[in-house]
Length: 523
Image (tube, rainbow, N blue to C red; front, top):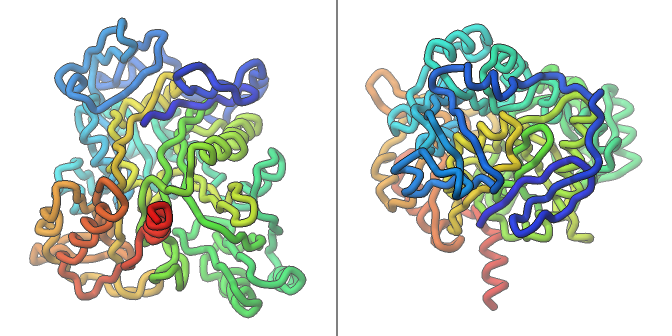
């Protein structure tokens, strides 16, 4: 299965057998300058001795994890693949489950010389997926730049949203270091829901009707006028917890007071968005973007609520699977055409080209069957990244470097046809208060349940006695592949059951929508 890139230069048009959607004849005005300038191809070659230098001929570049790639990184121009004269060292910024998954995929990339992760975590280090640099201050751009120059880093991949919003990409790119992740200006798509909603209004991107408030009295009156159910969101970054789906007026009032009066989310909740409740099925959609072109990834579906049956408060995500049956090829085309491409084009028109991964949280409406944008994240989702990286068969390092260089039009992605599922194991009490330092045992034994099982670490550390302990809310992502959803689910839960962690919990129904759809199809 392969996907090719979309471009933003005009109206969608199918380009030949490659399936490349090219938007031609309507070039963006040269007066629109991005807020961050990216190095020219001549500058790239001088960044470090490890930097990748490659040339592509007229055919599309297919970056695959094949034996041919493993045996020789030099490919002939005649067959249309890349000529790689060097392998790069990649630095991944972050230390959660998403970053572990990225390290896992990069470590399998034939064009990757070494993978470093700052700060990383004990699971990343022990697995050998990356060398963790725990003492690098990732909030200090000068320290990160100095480290990159010293270690000959050929590309930085920024995992979490915090450093993106803070402008780490801006500083790294200014220093001539290829960086996968948007500028702080472009990261406002996630950093401010109000910014995202206004962009939707301006460029006719389908989303829920909304109003923005800073006054709790006016916000409550709006809720009374609209009625429940209704959705209340903190405008800023709230670690995936700043959304309340209020089924009653009292729940909505409580959420408004929590954010605007009690300041439970600090500055992130000083402004709120109240939007209509959409009924349907949620899906996660990801696309790599190089400023002008967008390359869709495989679909995934997250489980946000903390409890079985999708009950309880929202979390950062309790599990996911890929692909999501609801995202058909036809729907994928609609999402690209009505949501992703207008966003990429709109951001360029606003003077802040987006380079990185767009993660669209979507609602596929029950009435119309059409997608509406719920929110944007400007990085890989967690735990969706885990299932995507388990299925990706392409050379991730080359793909991300192509995005940094504005060359996604030369890239196609290859995916495993298998289903992947991740079950998140969390500390009891999450997403509220939880105890830290509880001991987790049998991780290695759990990974031996099947060769198709991989456990990604998020909130883990070692205590003074060398025990693996939980130090976060979401702690482990137990991930498995299978020929169908039932096999992937069975393997994941078999591994979960081997993990000994009395103070942890997990949902038992991850993948229930896909299972239901599969059973319906087989009847």
